[in-house]
Length: 278
Image 1 (cartoon, one colour):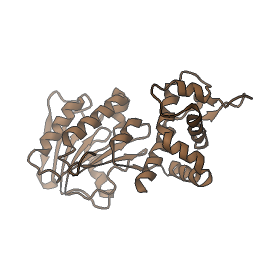
Image 2 (cartoon, helix red, strand yellow):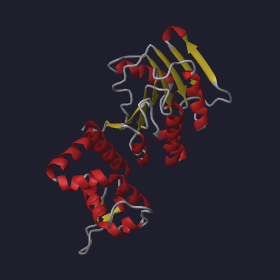
Image 3 (spheres, helix red, strand yellow):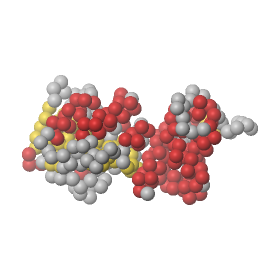
Image 4 (cartoon, helix red, strand yellow):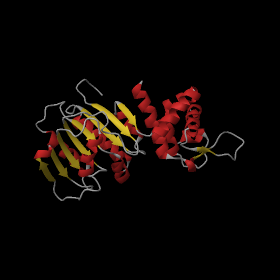
């Protein structure tokens, strides 16, 4: 973040992103891409702080009925106002609805919560989820108190660079990363530094069984060398994101047909969550 007046931004990852963990807010604006209003409101009861005193919800989920015009309802005795947009709403329309709920609130008094960006990425591509995040931070980064972003496994790698901290809910992956850190700190160091580039190289490579230099060649502007990328790829093998091709007596070849993108993302989230705790 650029200055002291910017909101603190946190990314929560996992099958059910723990996006509300640690929030104890009187006022919240929530954006729903993967949850309906009723289920979202019920979920607050499972948090330590409970339901906020005042919450505005922008429902842009697949569950919501698509509307030709914005539909806003107010439940005064429940401290709730919600705007139903439906899944057809574009990013700017969603953000305009957020802005309408922030009008009149002093800067730094409202938390913004995004339930899950994965439906946006699945529907319109990863770049759309990143673009939504960038516009959210641009428009509200100095108006909100905290911004909590949820993202299921398989989220865009670029999101990590947009946030101040990462929380991971995938206990199995966290344990595997911690085990590699203890047992082989050298390999862990390569994975920690280069997991994002390794993931990008795997996904850009058009070979099924490449060597590390061929994965490296698929990157447009790499920070790694073929050797350091190969060390990171070996770590991803150890962590269960891909396999090696056993039918070779020469340089290691990686079996990209066995690549698990969700596991790769979970590894990165677990690494970044550990870095956030340091």
